[in-house]
Image 1 (cartoon, rainbow, N blue to C red):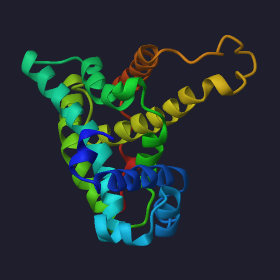
Image 2: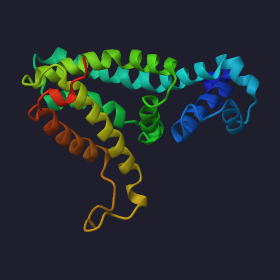
Image 3: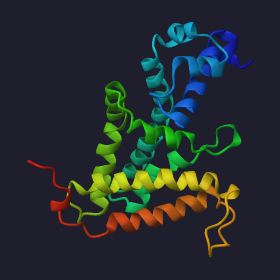
Image 4: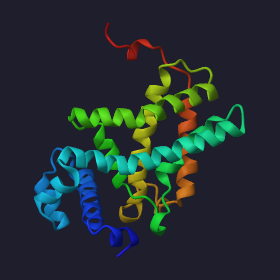
Length: 230
């Protein structure tokens, strides 16, 4: 039993509920996961959800907050340090600040799995308005700060372009991490027998940044195909 659990006997139950809910949300989505699913998998009873979180919706928000705030704080801290140290950080440096906290996780001596990636992707697909508002609040400063940093690093971009390129970035990141996490357990693509072992995390990061930086620097397309109807 750890120090927190010794001080608060309810802490272990609360943590177990959060851990279990996070895994189930990532596997099958928030809406498809019932309170009964959570308490059964956690080995508790429905009353524990009400006791610790008051409702499933508040449990959902706590699951997201626990993960996203830690990652986003690291992203902003890295960007702060980067912008304090030099007047004009390069695009690659800005991308490092954004990507590394998502990819790296040395807590407990292991790298972050793809569960958090799937959880975040699903958060943008869930119909709950409460969750959508929460995600907008959690990512608001990230979007503002990193869009501005990218525009400074790639001055030829128009203001609306970072929205699309950041959307493509996160889609590629989550897919890439999922591929990385299971590369050792699947057959290599036809003709690519050399792709048999997953690269180290550092190799993944460097490959990904090189790929994304080229996309960020690509010439902007005409705005009309992406224009919203008036």
